[in-house]
Image (cartoon, rainbow, N blue to C red; front, side):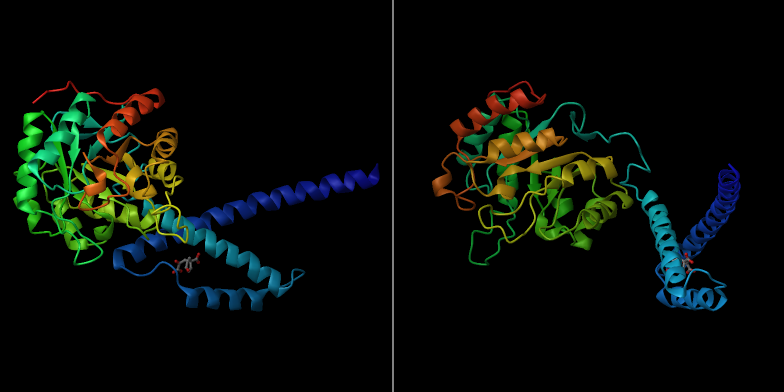
Length: 365
Ligand SMILES: O=C(O)C(=O)C[C@]1(C(=O)O)C=C[C@@H](O)C=C1
């Protein structure tokens, strides 16, 4: 009875100490936050190992026991780490692309076409623009399926300089002519910052490809463009780096940005890239921008595109990007991964059962 009374009393004292510790920890955290703000204003690194080492030495010297120095140092290191996280958390809060900054979803307007609302958007078309006939054949099939966003590469950043480099501005002209026939929107990759302005007369969405995700001059040029931007994740970029790349565009004044996960480079050889499916919910959680999955480049093979597309929609993607070619075997690029028109039609039939897919009224040219 007496012992239990003693235990209660000691525990009550511990409770009181806990409250005091909590008050002190909170006060310390507020100070660290304020330091973080000062450092941000001065452009100083938040992590300061020398300062941490000094503080660890002082607390060891001042340690009255009974905890040994090693334990005290460990506890304080945890406090420094938590303070640093808090400073960085605050920093993240400031990102324009973050959900902390803007909790509601951004709906991107490609002309009169909303992207990122409750309906899922499909973007499709050939890897490269090869001829007007080729683009027309694909556009007609897309239009019949109610797909309004036509993709096609005119400037092709190819791994080898000897591979087909695209038709350039002539490719953009073809895309525009054909898209207008079918009442569609054009999305095409731009690789040179100075081409963005030129391209504005032909295209409706500027695509920034994986290889250019950290081409900061291109990102800045896209930030000053009037057109929405479709930004692909770099093949070795972390999710954080991807969001910073998007931040370049948004902080430049263009908030009409769509993100696209297109697979990352890993040791796996059975797919062209490894689709980082967890990036989809992560990006949706961290950012308010619409998120797409490129099922063609992530897989590099036709046979698994449908289940991968279902997974992307189930993970919360706002849309899919895929490559369609009238005759993939003779395509000038990506021959092994593009699907033909009957395969595309079968794909659309299937995918409609797994999400509300946007359907634009077909305009048959
Ligand atoms: O004193 C600083 O420069 C801080 O940023 C504060 C603090 C701390 O919690 O004490 C946090 C992170 C740094 O690595 C060093 C110290």
